[in-house]
Image (tube, rainbow, N blue to C red; front, side, top):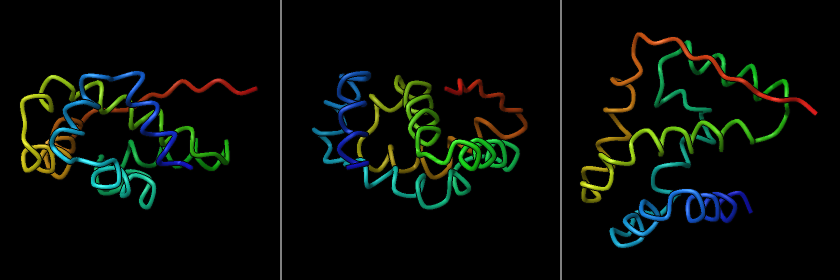
Amino acid sequence: QQWYQRRVVITAGLPELHTHFKAQGFHPTTYASQWFLTLFATLLPLNAVFRIMDIFLWEQTFDIIFQVGIALLKEGKDHLLTQDIEGMLQYFQNTVYKNYLGTFFFFSVEHT
């Protein structure tokens, strides 16, 4: 169900990126499974990971994973649209970390 929701969010919110991923055979499990398994620990600097973990534990839902994932996809959209599958994998394995190294993350999360 999580993967279906993720695909729906990408399709609705980032249709160009969804079409490009689909044309390249780049399924969400290819890049996003590590997001769920590690809460971004393999992708982002530790200060960001700690903040994401705090929110995840507080809310006890996967919403923060989706929110951060969509934000990362939006941030990298222009670059990702120019890449083949190998370039997209490289982006998620190396470029994202380098882009956010040394930055401090602030997340605003509404609680109901």
